[in-house]
Amino acid sequence: MRARILAVALVLSTAAVSAQAESVSHYLGRAVGGFGAGVGQAAMQPLADSQPQWVTVAPRSKTECLALTHQVLNRAYLRCRRGWQEYVRYDVAGRKVVLSERGIPRW
Image (cartoon, rainbow, N blue to C red; front, side, top):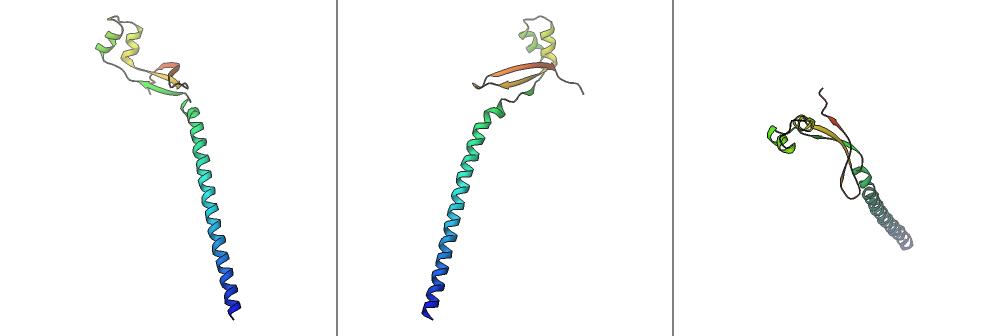
């Protein structure tokens, strides 16, 4: 009878240790996987930031536009008064690179 109890206790303790070891290995796997995902996201972030996008430059006031064009009414003045959109991306150093420009679409 004592041998049976001892055998059952041994089986239960072995099962508890293996379940605990499995949960530790599972935790370590998730931690390493999470770290790998974080590194991958950090590595891909500059690529995501460098994707070109349209940015709207809002129209400015009459006095601001006249100051920018040195009191001359020309195409630059009209562009300033109407606003425009720029197709931009950012280089590795964080500088804005304008790829294209257009007027603000009137829907």
